Image 1: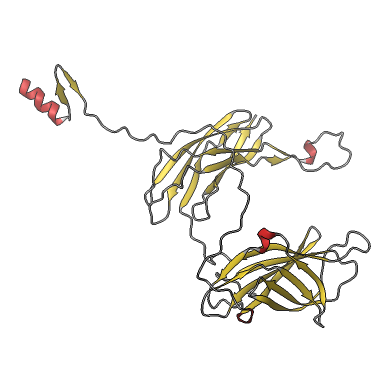
Image 2: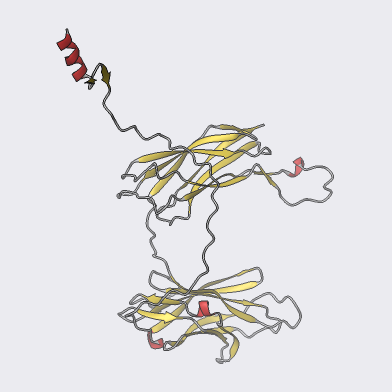
Length: 346
């Protein structure tokens, strides 16, 4: 009989220790979903920008090997902006710095308006142009540089714009961009106001034409109904849709969760509003929390991990609403977000 007991114990994976029979020690499975972290996140303020150190071993571009192209214009809040790209015909990479001055010229080559860059941080901006990136029409591509200029005011009715001259830091010098005749626009707010020109966006290299595909895909499991003024529990699932193992960046990322709410219908507003009041939204919520990724560990391709979420439904929420969730502070290649329609009952 004793032999039979020992055989059964061995088959069931049990161990005999003294007078007691114990189960073998095993690693506890990870909880699913991973518990919510209630801490409210406060993003760290961005540090004061400082000029990037220029790379060594890359020569400065010559003005003779540079060319520019006009990519379009638009107006906003009284300003009129124009975009340009710069590239090189050289077979080797080269560096441009600045620009330190921008000038609009009329048909006779006479200066219409000009602007010098005095801000040290801006004037020290630089870009390494990729080889053989001379612009062709308004087509832009990786390896070129982009720049946006803007004008404001024109009470004197400036003559048509025919060319733009960009002056880069020595030894590069001037690069002229010819344009079809165009009015120099900008709102004139006061009689006699003078036309002004600024470098609206600093010199920057164009991003790759084809960004990396996202590594994570998000989905939300949530009840179809929520109650106003009560906490709502839901689950967020993150799946690795890339062919590589996904490793979380240093420190767990933050995420934004929220409710979109709804605009108050004019018929819902009190009758004391004789004139139409501005739109008002109710039932909105926005919370930022740290993701509990330390327990999740790395995610193999095709695998999915789930996280518990909670959000406080506002007391003024009612009716149709949208629950949304997205990772914050990650690159496009790792960004993930999802949304789901829910109904909020009083």
